[in-house]
Length: 511
Ligand SMILES: Cc1cc2nc3c(=O)[nH]c(=O)nc-3n(C[C@H](O)[C@H](O)[C@H](O)COP(=O)(O)OP(=O)(O)OC[C@H]3O[C@@H](n4cnc5c(N)ncnc54)[C@H](O)[C@@H]3O)c2cc1C
Image 1 (cartoon, protein in one colour):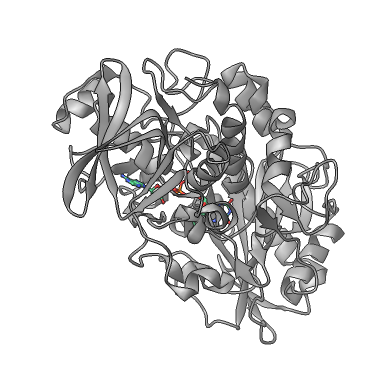
Image 2: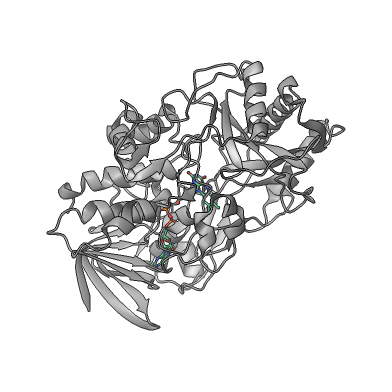
């Protein structure tokens, strides 16, 4: 039987941060449990390879249920099962979000720590920005944040110029203040190689004597003594084993964290009963509030000449816009465009040959569709029922149409005329609202940002409180993408690291 002061479940993005920061205190004995193993696949480090990593053995390879809003399609949801978690699979774009995104978190929790000003020290502490240290950027944190310049694809440069010609503001980088505008993507890439959260935070400190990393260990459920969580039941070398700790940090991500709570009997009573799980606490919101960004893949153009392969990670520049007036510099944005130096389509379309086409992606920054994650059985093997309820609100459908319209406007801009031969998708004849809606339903794909399933809040229904403690229980904290109450404007990784950094900074006060 092993005992620790702190047990961290999941060595993914947030778990890597916590393990590194909490083990800075030599008096704390830290255990870090990960279902996956250390990365061995050399492709993980190569930024251009990221889209091909999905469905490999270190992907949990979840699937949504058929989505009414997307022509009944089932959407693959990759998640990393590996040391580094989803940061080993992700697309490496580093976007903090708009200050208003975090104002909503501070409002939801009644806690200024989750405002942009409250999180800024954590954003700075986490990064080594290639542009150097400043009031907004960190210069000596664990995570490399690289703002590329000369490696940018010439097609992406032309798309950025088309945005500027349309009056879209130039913002330099996405993390320096204003978000509305166009900039190259800041990337977690160093010397041409991916930097996962584990590369940044965990690998350099694995030798600390007070930290034990257990890989290939799957946690089945929590062990409780009354209202105190005292340990976990895990499977080690095929055998069930108990591990105990004073405090447990659940960092298993937006899918696995609520599932683990539900397998432990903490969740909606009716759903637990249907799954054959004894209910300890009827907590309706566990697994609720599931939401994600969608991207329309895509507005594809046949090129007049060969498109050179991306020297980065294909999707090199995001453009955040006010949907009504894309020239408006003040945010928050409500739509986003992105340029991919390659054809990018959903499984419903035949992609043109690589090198022959490029894509403008489009999406909605603050979707209002909310779905649910449901446990289907007491065992780890029971696949979750994942229903993000994509495009289930008029708000999301209207803005998805508008985002595609803006993509086409930029795509047909003069600055891209050297590259554009013709629009392949949706195709120049696709114009009516019904035709556009049909295209969107078949073309949207996940932007890979599921959040919200253990949301933090000040209300009694929220799953965790402003200190990320599981409501109604002692000794358990949830620290990962699941606590995000409402999604940020952009990719969520930077915000997840900042959540973990902020939690770790206040850890000494937690009991
Ligand atoms: C393909 C893809 C592209 C993406 N692109 C971007 C991007 O460009 N920019 C961006 O900001 N974000 C991106 N994201 C999202 C981002 O990577 C994730 O939101 C983030 O990594 C989630 O962090 P987390 O700590 O919540 O969970 P994870 O990093 O997923 O970590 C959870 C860990 O817990 C482990 N675990 C789960 N269950 C158990 C169990 N029962 N027992 C033991 N261990 C367990 C998992 O194996 C995993 O290692 C992308 C994600 C994917 C998949």
